[in-house]
Image (cartoon, rainbow, N blue to C red; front, top):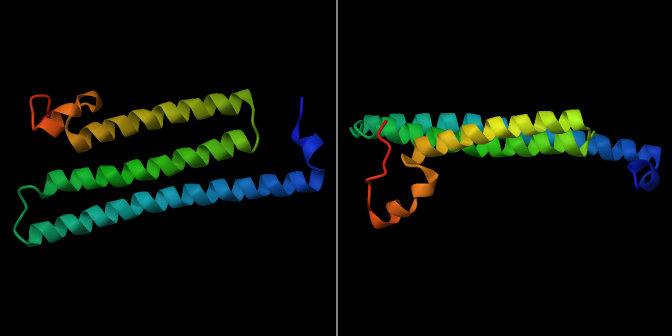
Length: 138
């Protein structure tokens, strides 16, 4: 079995692990920034719509835009978790923790996607034809 000790010297191994740790932290921070930017952007846009007198649709669009920002941020957070838990110090405990985190975040992503689109993901073909019979009303 080839291990990192055989490929890299001890000094090089520390540099690589340190770089991976900083990369995972930077991606995680970027994911949080994306979520915050999504919240601020959706809020500002929604207030603008209400000021222009289009408040009837503003809440639904606000929720959809907010959900899109959260979804994008979750993708970055999952990527950071993969780098941080598997690439840096792989172990079965960390892999199990990562699997649980991914299951939870996938469920959140799925729920947000249903909230944004208003229909089940496997029923998207009806949206192209204009058929709203599968629409989920909040």
